[in-house]
Image (cartoon, rainbow, N blue to C red; front, side, top):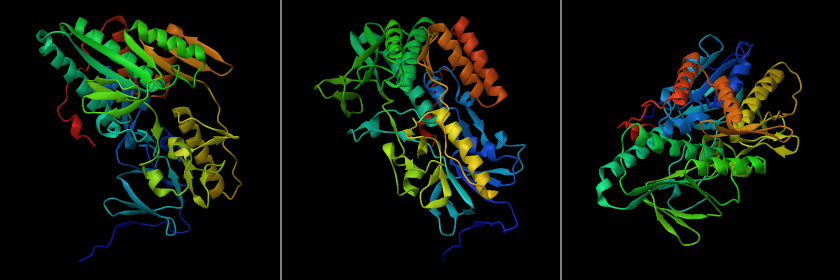
Length: 431
């Protein structure tokens, strides 16, 4: 007998407008915060019951932080906001005519306004084997899986140290902020397991290679920032190779366009992002660069005045310029979307989004970072590193998380403790 799907009660016309936000990333939380304590009712839907602070995932992957340090329960964030609720689940379909979101458990949620804040995922550019064998870094599960892989490979090299000369190659693909930060942290991890944990690789040469098709690192930064990042990585033992085009990734190897096949312990994928394959891609018929949902200057989906898209999921424009898929853009677009929804509910006209560029940052390791500020100002070295630490602590959610992270960073600065270098058996089973 066919079952009738559960439908969460629709609001009568006299009740507050109901806003459903799909995604609890930076953009989704910003939109929800902008609507918290207002006259509308808000439901946040996400397949995870926590918000992940993505800029610090690489530190989880390289055993610098614990997963709980960069994640915070969504329900706790909005625990004091009576008009905001959370629904744990994955969206399967949207009926725009009836204005209903259907989840995978067949339950339905009605809405007056829908906000797509589903973020992005790794872009593999149709390279054979990349999606199967390369390791992305866009979720807690990715970070834990990568940490397991790195630590297992280092432990295995220690066991096999008597087998004679060899190479253990960790290849990071992509010279943007994620690739730079991950390769620098990985080099520090290798150094610490030798000095503090007593691992001995014998005659095996452990290499960290950062490869990119471009001619410099951090192409969205000023050239001086890219040159500094390269010098800082090389000083930490990272081999930086430009003009390398990946044509295939195998289970234990990577192939380049020049014909070289390099055996690898792990291939870490930081080559770019796409919206293709996410909920926003499945639910929108009009997409732009990287599969992003095309939106109006006010962040509405064209032809659907009740649907909005923000953050990495959307092709956000500021004037005539397409904004990059960065956390500050996600946060600002989420806030703007909330304001526009409140304007619509109040019967007022909407206004276009304007991005306020406050600069971008990337860290290479302890005492080394670059910050590109408006006006072509570049801060490097220890000062840039301190600015990077301060900014990330400011945006990190939760007092407990901030306290744990600042204690961890301070301890690691003056001494290198054992840290969370744990191989957790269930990492591969986490969704």
